Each structure stands twice: as structure tokens, then as C-alpha cells.
Image 1 (cartoon, rainbow, N blue to C red):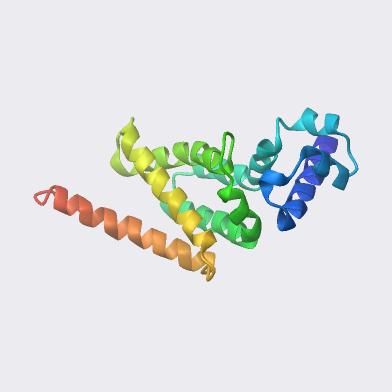
Image 2 (cartoon, rainbow, N blue to C red):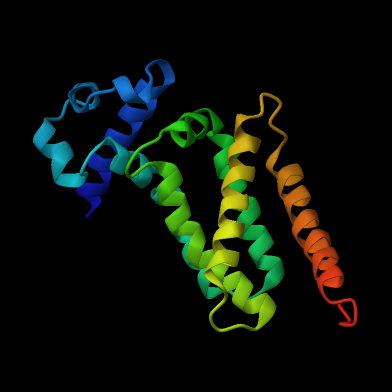
Length: 190
């Protein structure tokens, strides 16, 4: 397993270096392999394609945070985890700006949707007490989060992650409360 991760990290580093100067669409598997002195067979042993490699780069950093989020029911800790995830995105924002712009099957955007859906569904379950929240509601919030992250990272004056998370938290807490009050003015919301 250790050798497998060493190989994957080498391929990931090669792709990230190439993406600094070359558009993703123009990068070929052979270039990635040449950069880290591996053969194509090694690449395909670990990854289906270069999209899979981009998703692995994300997963290598964020899968542990997502697992922690799914097992922890503390609301405050969720915001800490979100802050840590955003700090990682911010730290490598040059790569993630380009990676999130990639379109096509297996893109990072599609992969993020798959990762975020269970996290947001769990949060909605906790906040509403519904065992099976409406799929439309879950997807609405997934879309909102993906769009917000993309816009934040693409902003040339990208604010620090603490500022971004504070704004998102405020919008979600205050905005959602205002919407619920308007939907049912007779209901008391805290």
C-alpha cells in the first residue's frame, strides 16, 4: 500500500506541475508518466484516466475530512471541518481553479457533487429532523455550495477562507431562518 501511495503521489505531482503551464485538455498521459519516469501501464494500474487522477488529488486531502464530518454530530465541529477544507482549497487555489474549470465526464465538479450530496443530506436531516429529506432540497444546497466555492476560488481577490466560511455560515443561518419565518409566520423559529 505504501508503494501504491508513493506512485499515486508522484503522478499527482506531475499532473499538478504540468497544469501550471499547460491546459488540462492538452495534457496527455504520456507527459504525466514521462515527468515522473513511469510507464503508462503504471498510470493505468492506479487510475482510469487523468480525470480520475484529479479526483484522487482531491480525495487524498479531503476524504478524511468528509468521513469526520459524517461521523460527528456537533454543529460547531462541522464549521471547523468546513473551515479546514476551505483552507486546503485556498492553499492550493491555483490548482483547484483550473481543476474546477474542467468539464466532462468524471470532472472534479461532478466528483465534488458526489462527495457533497451525502454531507449536505446529513446536515439537512439533522437540522430538520427528517429521515429522508427531499432530493430537490439537497441538490439545491449542493448546487449552491459548488457555485459558491467555484466563484470564491475564481475571484482574483479571493478572500481568505475564514472570511469566506464566515459569510457562508451567516447566509445559511440567517438566510434560512428568514425564509422559514416567511414560509410559516405562525411557527416560532429560534
